[in-house]
Image 1 (cartoon, rainbow, N blue to C red):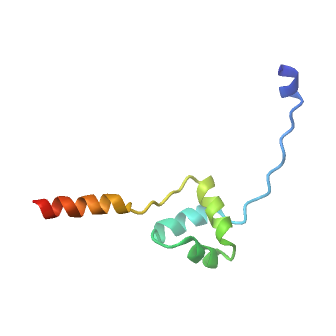
Image 2 (image 1 turned 45 degrees about the horizontal axis):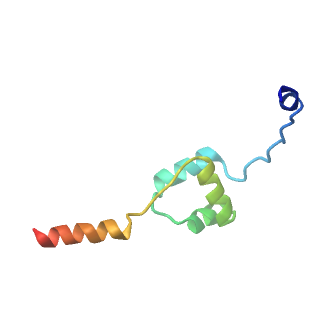
Image 3 (image 1 turned 90 degrees about the vertical axis):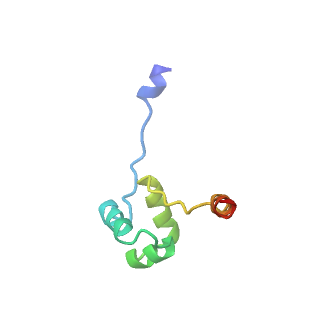
Length: 78
């Protein structure tokens, strides 16, 4: 098994089309923008932005509908 690990070769990764620091700055400046809006600013595709955000572990999740509904119900009951 160790012999297989020694012979394992890694593939060189293509450089990213999107600069990581520039994308982080863009997310801080425009936190609510959609991926297609970021793609237009960076001159690339939506999937490229999505891949870069995933690589940087940046997620922006909107509040789920169920949570809003529960909050509204609790406010109405009080």
